[in-house]
Amino acid sequence: MAPSLYLFLFLLIFNSGNRVASKSKVRSFPEGFLFGASTSAYQVEGGAFDDGKGLSIWDVTSHEKTSPIQDGSTGDVSANSYHFYKQDVEIMKDLGLDFYKFSISWPRILPDGFANNVNKAGIDYYNNLIDEMLNNSIKPFVTMYHWDLPQQLQKIGGWTNPYIADWFKDYASVLFENFGDRVKHWITINGPSEICYGGYGSDLLAPMLNMTGIADYACAKNVLLAHANAYHLYDEMFREHQNGTIGIALNFTWFEPTSDNPDDHQAARDARQFLFGQYAHPIFTKEGDFPEEFKRKIAGKSAEQSFKRSRLPELSATEVTAIRGSADFLGINSYTTKMVYRDASIEGMYPVPSYMDDMGVVIVKDSMWPQSQTDWLQEVPWGFYKMLREVNRLYDNPLVYITENGWSTAGGLLDEDRIRYLRNYLSALLDAIDAGCNVQGYSVWSMIDAFEWRDGYNAKFGLYEVDFSNEDRSRTPRKSAFIYKEIIKSKSLDPHYEPEVYLEEVPENEEKKDDYVYNK
Ligand code: NOJ
Figure 1 (cartoon, helix red, strand yellow):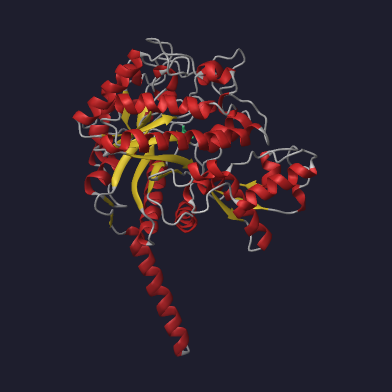
Figure 2 (spheres, rainbow, N blue to C red):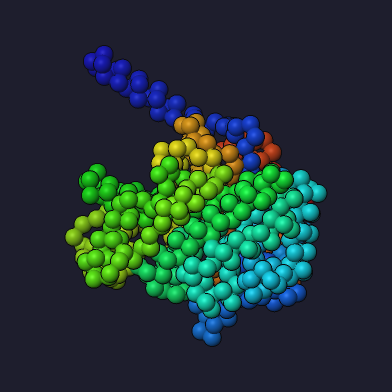
């Protein structure tokens, strides 16, 4: 063998050995890194009609005569956290969480959506929850809006009505006044792209308006203005005394081109601009406003379609300024990756006009990637890494908290696939930190099983299983809960760690799981 070939083989073996070693060794999280878990009001609270709470769009949608929910269920009771919140705090303690991301139900605080009528029982409930958490040293990360809009506001257009930016500001003011003395991390709005495209551009989420290419863009502008209003209100009236931080949580799916062809690379960039650039660019770039290419595409298509103006409403100079820089941190909800390309097959693929037609890309799944119980969710940790690098590059290395990341199963306590997913994503996160990304916290979706929107209770995301068939809604830790607990305790990722309780006590047979006793 020629010496150069020896050298090549030596390097190959040496390097690949190194790579394996680096993935199998114990890796530590940086000093001060925060670990959390997430839920949202409609998904876990229940108490939907209790103590003066008003109706939300999800109360209405889930009670439609022909149920749009896969298993015909509702969030009326769900995990009943409205009554069992102390058990949730027990779980937070057991896991050793630094923080818990939960949301406040707007109609539980303001039954009609407006701030003239504040529901005292709603204020009491969140006061109790926050105090119970603080007594156990768990920081509240409070989301003001996680999709349960007061139905009264929906009647007058909901997020498509420009006045909502003021109504949201009034709601935010009630929250700062009542809880701001103890809440130091606020998230104004969770998942604008799901709110706007899911709720107004399609029928994937309430209010299922399904008016794509128009209502989704009107919603986007109003969500940005509502967010900026809450941010400036905090800045001007509350920050000085309350000393907290305030940000927004956006959905960051990664889009990867299917080939090296420049068209496919452009398609991937376009898909990213439509999904997250639409919201992140106006807030997190120096120039602000919607991304140029995004504006140009929609304006061009609108003109071709004989609209008198772009279907994407403009942001005025004053609005651009108000939105730009209106966040102390970026919350990232990220679960998966999709492949995209652009070729002639796109002709006639999407309705005209529509958000998908404006974006103009074909989105596909790679069947080789591990598949969860949820159709859109596959495990692709390298996509998570690439997404974090791109966020760093596009938005000048913002302070990031991963506000949601997680995996769904069909149920059961032995959730090896969730464990693999969490470990791989956390490892990708550490790679991103090593590469310079300023990620300071991570929160798993979800702490306990929850109502998964149109999937009802068919997809289980919880570290803890909830028994929805029993009145007590008993909560049982899955194997992943023990793994996450150890990660938090050791502040490190040990790919070989096995919780003893699971080695010894969990019966193989799922039916016998009642016999299984776990360490509490
Ligand atoms: C993001 C949403 O914020 C949350 O409500 C949902 O349950 C998870 N994705 C999983 O679909």
